[in-house]
Image 1 (cartoon, rainbow, N blue to C red):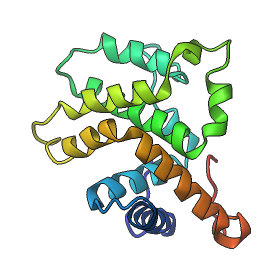
Image 2 (spheres, rainbow, N blue to C red):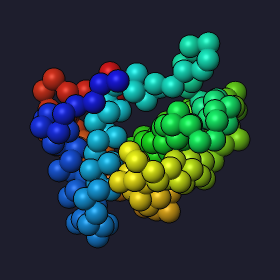
Image 3 (cartoon, rainbow, N blue to C red):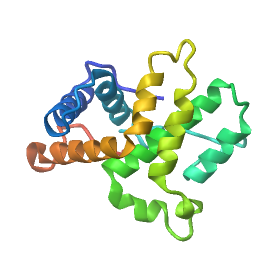
Length: 181
């Protein structure tokens, strides 16, 4: 899975916007949290990262309900289970915060996600992922716990980050950059 290096222009842009928004707008000065969120935004530039999970048959998992089924099928102590729950947290936070207008489509009456509350499931998923506190997860666990506890605040913050990047260059991203390509 592609993730831009810390010196990549998009990563730097997301880092700056996230840090500025969380400090100036929300009064949250937590470098580990803003680093995590800007890295997530950078990763989710590609649709393949948003929908990176696959089931045992290799089918792309596009609904949180499907992701939860896969996570529950994993051994409780397994790394893969942690990664699935972390991804569910990221997935729900991304759509809730950055593109809330897409939730109507994602949770349509024809979708299994129709009955899923993305905020509640995001909080739960981050909490489960945060319980993996042994190496190599000991540094990320507190950030995931904070995301669980302050999911709504982070979603609001990400929505403000989006508003800021849309104001750059009159609603355009830097040349050569695109979201959800």
